Image (cartoon, rainbow over all chains, first blue to last red):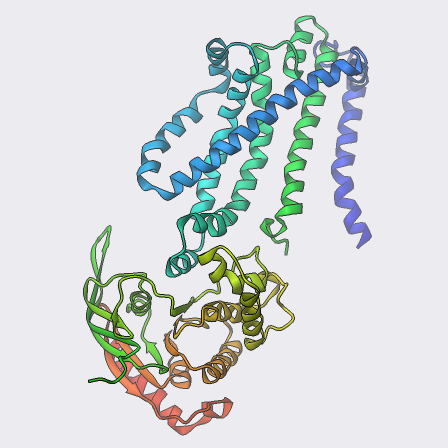
Length: 255
Length: 258
């Protein structure tokens, strides 16, 4: 039992360590120039190239925009999903528009949004919303429609108000769908924030990476990238933790 | 006539559904009455409109033709004195057994009183699930889940209980056990029961009267009053009378299917 538990957990760790080792050795063995691919040890050095407080500033810049955009997106997407799920007319009218919005490459529209909305937090939050919004709406709508028809009949047979049909039946039933979208969207939110910083920013990890590469400080850029990846991973795990703690029944049954 | 009106009365009821492939006539010329506290089984092959009959009675569906009366009053919307048990238990997976039983009142009024909790507790005991109040549905077997479904349907203390093949998803043994359980509850607290089933033996074992439905468009082709003595138990299954009824109904259904 104990062995069966340890082995699967150690497997990815071992793979990861092996990749890092091969990477490190290859860089020295083949004398790969550091602007092509810096060795892990040099990337580690990149962390020390700026003050820890400056790191916090950059992390906070990206995190703040990503989180504001994420929560605004959730707050907008769920009511829209409820409206789409309730009305065939609304869903026919607005679904194609949602698809068009989703089909617009965020990287391409980002500079336009920055010009239109200035260089503050607002355009960055808007860009983050644009990228996180669609999966949330689609998944939540699907979830709201996935309720067993018997429960809707039960609700109608009780002549209960519609808002309770939504709050007590449809929304809870949509929870697993909403969480799968929340997991996708939280990593998209980080991407959105970084894209916005590429276009116009004076801090944030996206800005930091772009600034570092323009100065040919490649290991420093790599260090920024590592932190960005860690940030995404932590946020992703945080969403999973929220689901585990508050909605354990919504997790898939492992049998 | 001044006698109390029938619990359920169908007069010339027809039902046509508009589907993408055209009109579908589900029911035609259905006439029937069910008396108060009578246990009536509606028996028929799948797709004969049995469930439509149930939805019409509950007021979830309005008939295309004819009228439906419940206790002498035309059905125009769902009523408070009707409880429904579905084929699948369809409990709320996030709510405890107690909360699932309390669901009707919480859903209708938005709040739950201490009296409601007492009612729920009594019902949970009645369906044999004492000590399971705080469990979640997926910790219970299929039969136990359907017991919760019955307790939920009984919560508003309805006069009429509509049951849509409630035991058809259960294994044969549990199914029989649940049938007796239902009879025990019904004898203890009489209700008008409309029990939809496609099992001949289940219909004979449980009901006072069996309405046999013919296929599309569905109509009632046989109205069979049985006089198997009550209370019924495991012994009833071996009763010669029961075998005769089952045989009669089987040949009737087979003849119609041929």
